[in-house]
Image 1 (cartoon, rainbow, N blue to C red):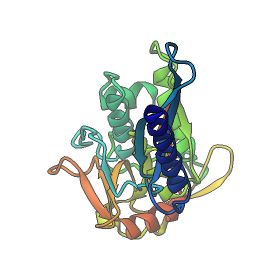
Image 2: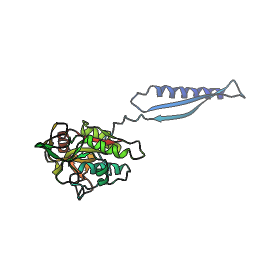
Image 3: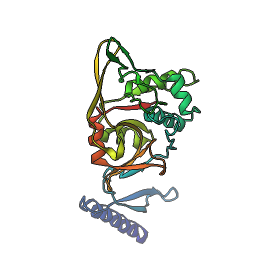
Image 4: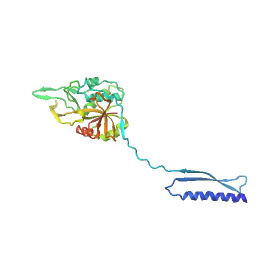
Length: 273
């Protein structure tokens, strides 16, 4: 009889624990009490209630998305001088290809794979390349001009087709600078961008000539191409591998000013993937 009374008391304690836990508010750490009812095979008329364990768990607060504040990809800088005084675009492409593991020098890439056209005069008309698709002049000539994103995409793909690779260059012009940082730089994918030279001096319309197709084109001064490699949101700067910088391994620019120049040049950019 005493043993049966003890069993009943134990059962009452277990039920009290269960009710107490169930009444706790949702804001407090949740507890779970597990109970087991065991029938004694030797004395079937008696039962024992055993409290097995009490586990206390605390719900972790929902973590907010952590935004990357600073990033820099290690792209080895290649200087365009002295071989390619006007070859910032093809030199930047050489850097991008080297980052991806391709062994090609800037001069070979320029001579063998870059579409280019020399200037000439006919019937008093000054003819030159449509620099959107063809380099105006020659990167080895200090008095030449340059080219835009579609031309560099062609040069890159001309080269990549000779390699055993599925990689290809893509013109992603029109992308906002911010999207380049999140979609590519954060994923360790450097991209080529068109900005201006001379520490981001403003561009302005300059020389005008006629393409062989009869189209009038006008060049923008200070046109420049670099490899976008990183940023720091707290310092509001953007990192680049700049082929005109003969000293530092990377060049940092004010983010707002670079964005303005990037927009002036038509938001031109190229990726390889």
